[in-house]
Amino acid sequence: MPQVKSVFRIAENKKLRIFILKVLVYSVLLYLSKVSKPFGEWVKEVEGLSNIINAFLFLLGANILISLARMLTARIYLRKQKEENLHPNFLLGIAWISNILNSIVFISALIMAFGLRPFEFLTSLTIVAAAIAIVSKEYITNTINGLIIMFTDQFSLGDTIKINDQKGIIKDITLLNTVLKRDDGLTMMIPNNLMLSTHVINYRFTDRKDVEFLFEVPIETQLSLKEIKEKIEPKLKKRLESKEISKFVVGLDGVFKEKIAFKLIVGIAPEREPEIREEFDEILLELLYDKK
Image (cartoon, rainbow, N blue to C red):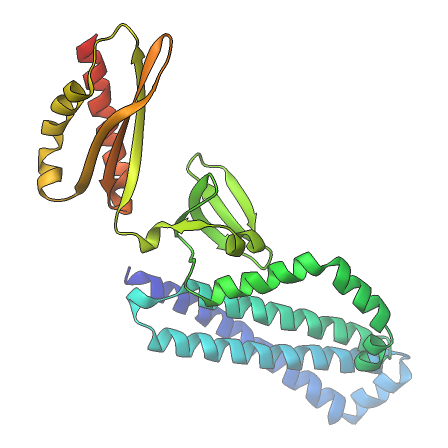
């Protein structure tokens, strides 16, 4: 994992170059509009151009300040945080906050471009704003919960979680949804409200997890629980001795008219699940072929 921090640093360096370019553009435009008399006279001749330039200066200046605050916060965080404690959600959170602030600045600049004052314009729309807030209440709470997820360590990018009967890896966290890639490869969008109001298992915080293996045999197949355990346990001897497998239980999952369903429960470390599953699939196939 030593490359994780460097990946973030490379991304921050790219943003720094864009930031420098924005500062240069802002400086040139500010000089032309405030110092250069020919430019100032030309602006006065074109109706509405002065409002547009002031709006653009406001937009670019505010964006520079927001970007500066975001970059300083990110660099301080990367410098102080150790590699193993690096929390990608924090960087994701400050990026989303800067996006929200930039959106507010853009709307304000757009209002200024039409020769209006943003504060007076917005206060005149108080009733409309209240109605919008009521209608979009769920979106607002989703956004707040999204920021809570980003700035806490409950969930992080790459975590394997189980919510209700859905299990998968967190691929992204937005202001409205948490993007989950399921074991079958499908992508799910889970509302952030649901993430914080429902029982969720995060396997990052568990040293061991129980994995179930289900298989069925025809009712006429004479296969006992003891026989299954005696045939499988020797193949797991090394893993049991090294505690890679902390639990091994054989049981019935159901007895039906034409078949019997067996269930194996194995206690393993979450990160070893793919490897153990593959091994168990081979063992079970060997057991069933031998029985035939």
